[in-house]
Length: 211
Image 1 (cartoon, rainbow, N blue to C red):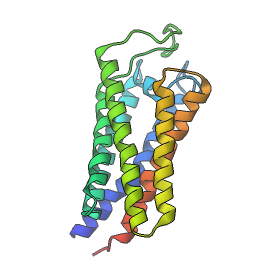
Image 2: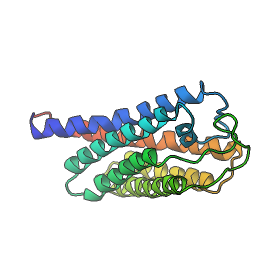
Image 3: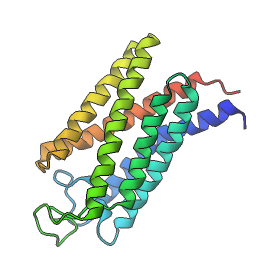
């Protein structure tokens, strides 16, 4: 396979990673007993007898994001930080799968309604997520600057707005407030960041010659 074809193949993972993660998460959210989309973060799905599904979802999605990051690095040799930052985000998803979130807020079924006990792996899960989220936000801002420099104003604004919206969603969920507005706001922010990664990947895929 030619180098450009490898790059295009890697960028393809940036398109499918988000839909894969969202589809697997929502399939569980709508079918697992006691899970409430308006109250529970998707990370809680890693608990219970079927928790291995979400753990696997985190790991596979993270590996796809890392592959996409390599594609971004190859497609943007003059902007290496974009691929590096997205790569850290991918690694954080793998770590979030390995470090299970603590049960709480009544999920899994039978868990007390409060926030629950904090374990070492729960702290690790939150830390991995925080690092990854900050890196992907930074990637949005760096990519926005690159698009602006290239005269692609629409893509620049998309990148900047995506980063700001994801930051707002992350701050809201990190506050510990489980009100529906905060939980659903973070879900919306997750959808925004996956859409951003797909948009950038498609743009660079098309810009990379297939030869």
